[in-house]
Amino acid sequence: MRSWLAVLLLAISGSAAAVERVVSLAPSLSEIVVELGSADLLVGVLDAGERPAELESVPSVGRYGQLDMERLLSLKPDLLLLWPGSVGPAQREQLSRLGIPTFVADPHDLEQLIHQIEAIAKQLGRPERGRTLAADLRKQLDDLRQRYQRTEALRVFYQVWDQPLYTVGGGQIISDALEVCGAHNVFADMSLPAPQVSVESVLSRNPQVILASSQVQLDAWKAWPQVTAVAQGQLLLVTDKGLERPSGQMIEATAKLCRLIAPTR
Image (cartoon, rainbow, N blue to C red; front, side, top):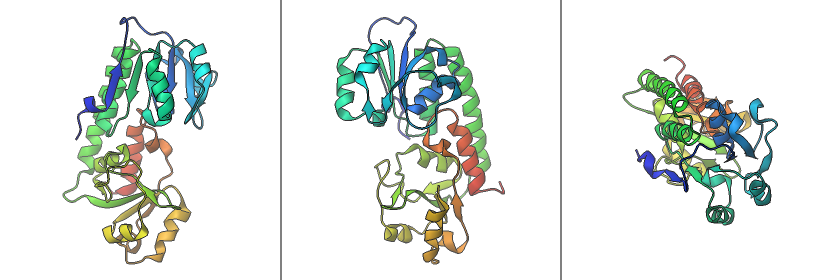
């Protein structure tokens, strides 16, 4: 498991004064601020889908890959929260030249995510809230590991999309969620976060479980009855989108995933 320090880059300049004006450049980071009871500090957010109710009136600074730099600057933030994938390389370079203190987070597993939540709470000047939330999340995570551990992990194919066929790689946090549930991503050997794969490569790895967010995608696999997941009726529909948002709620989303994969445990 990679050190959490390797994936949390904290570039804070200037004094250690408490922040008052925060702009979040990823929905998952906005959600973490809300979970820490600190929505009052957010003066701008990057949009993607529905917002938490607490953030309905917070100004938008754009959408994924379309950051409105002029709008961001007008908000005079004293801290930026950034997930690298939410902003294009050219605009990330622009941000780095602005001199605004920036917290960059890209967790690759659930323990790194919990460290990230603690670190964000500290930057918001509310470290005790971070410690309390982190302790609760770690207990939930430890309970899940104990409940769902297996001598031999279930082989799982996690389908992201069908045309073309995409999955998650070993460095993606969803892959770690599968491990917590006593399962193993059959494409964990691939380093890309969302690699494109072929039907033939899925067949050759013969997953015992296939997960997807669409019943149509799952039904398509019935054309290959030789796959163990198909033969055993383990084509499972993932309806909770929480696995796609690495915030505190992802621990509960992982619990739902575990119950889906192994309901008898």
